[in-house]
Image (cartoon, rainbow, N blue to C red):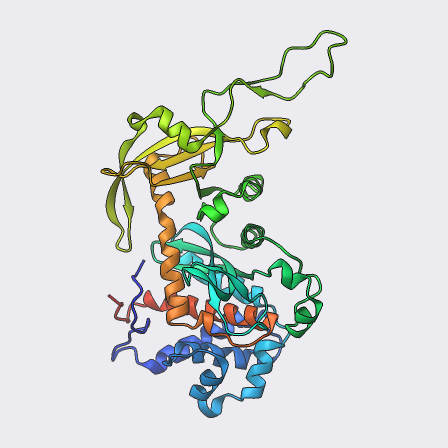
Length: 417
């Protein structure tokens, strides 16, 4: 993937002047907007919004964006288009993904969430909550997202605005922010699962799903992905309990008459143990050096890993059958006193260690995505107080991000360093 810098993403030369870039942007806009927008004024305003996002300017909120567009844009029309116009943002995201994903050599889908710092209390979902963007608790919205990442770039596959429980129960605030009645409280992993399931029905390549510990520790999410036959490599903590590979599950022998209810569920021959305890019991001898490609330039990296087959132990007493066998991946870098990271994965038992290690470490690409989406395209600059407006803005930012991804591959362009 091309590293993201603070400079503008598209670098043009004399062979490919800015006018040609604008013409290609207009054509791309019609391509990805037309299915969602059935009125000519919507497509026109959408195209203008894309142009406003790509042009120079530190703020990408509506007022300065329209000002940069000059006489081409009408503020009232653009405001109505963004905040209230009834076009489906998910259709724009899908059209962009189906156009861009085949060009980036998709290797994984990444789940994550990011903060949108806000002043006041009227923006939908805003409250004092922890934000990784801020690195602390602050007044912000939180958006959940899924991104396809590949060797030639990335493309967002969906956005969901997290609505805290207190917002869900506040009818006055909901009405003011125009939050639909059917929107109910859902956890971030639930929102992420819905985004993944929706994208899985699109005409794009499926790939293993990656996510940090906030998603990986959620047993329901892992089971939901597994039931949907979607592969994952999800980060977990050392406190997660598992059954080691040598555990045997057997149905207890029949009891004699009058000795109580017969147990029919398989029982393990040992207690589950936390991942950290399992690794301490097995010791460093289980770890081996693995070479894999990682980092922005795809250079070859080396680190020590162990790969074990385990079964998750969450609520095992209630199961009619043992949980699926899956990979436990643990990294213990040379020179460190203890392991640094842990993952659970449902990739096939035949998966090579190099692929498991690379996928486990691939999630860093999401940070480059957020850097471009926010730092260059104004993902977090939406200042409106409309629920639909937030989704419209993120969809249009996704579209222009997709356009720029394709532009990097244009043979007449100088590529950013």
